[in-house]
Image (cartoon, rainbow, N blue to C red; front, side):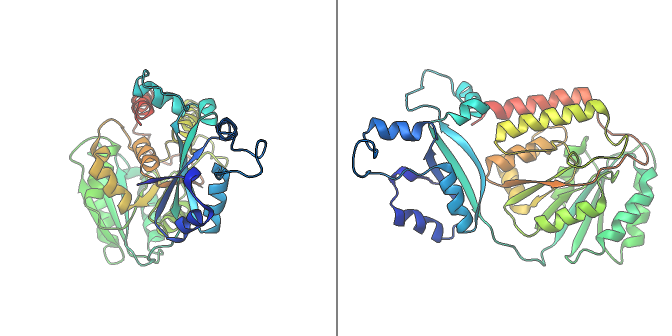
Length: 362
């Protein structure tokens, strides 16, 4: 994607750029600290002359004009820290500095990407992948969720990926598939690998929909909220809806204290690294488009084993590939049966490794 230098544009060129109705637009602007300084150094300011030679377009100006032409900002990132040459510093060090909050505010050159908002075909197929391991005790919740899925106006396919449970989860899912076969397209898979990320990958490899959703089989996230998020995400292929359990009060015992603190710390770290507010870093309910999935498959991140759950990979790749990340508030309840299939300390260290990988990357 070609980035447009705003300081070289005329008024007509700027407006014509928006009027071309491209799916994405990327602009470079001077940082708020450097913009007046660079003009003063060139004596290109009303302080020194009757009129100026170049436009003084800021980040705020581009965002405002984008709203007028129905473009929405995805994110902005630092392209140059200073006007001085910094070749003596390793690229990894410069990439880390560009992501630090204070440094970002003082950057010399900033790049902002916007996407054209337009709603997609409402009749497209929705694929919902539900990884399930040791969830036989949640049979009633599974049945209740499927009854609500029936009410979605779009065609829906449900893909259960059973993760080699120690209980009779597979038999429960087989019976549910049989009972609902006249109302929903249900695919039941036996997971060949291990871990939630692998289960999601195997599920989407069998999917056919244009809108793709991940829902945890414990249904601790309110299923009506999850369905609403899916419907909203189906309207635009350039967004990732990241459901957030931490905005409203959650049910007692829904999330252990240490997990909550870790989640909030990771949410702050991710927000800094991608320059986009993330209120819940590890909610299992996420909705995105096949377009985004295909990009992750093409660049290899989808099959990476670095991320144990896939949540961070999805968030980082959405940011890197210009998909708007939107937080969707959901209600969160305590588990009705079973226990979480995670190891919080070991998996926490793995997630830190994922963050470090993306921190040093461009």
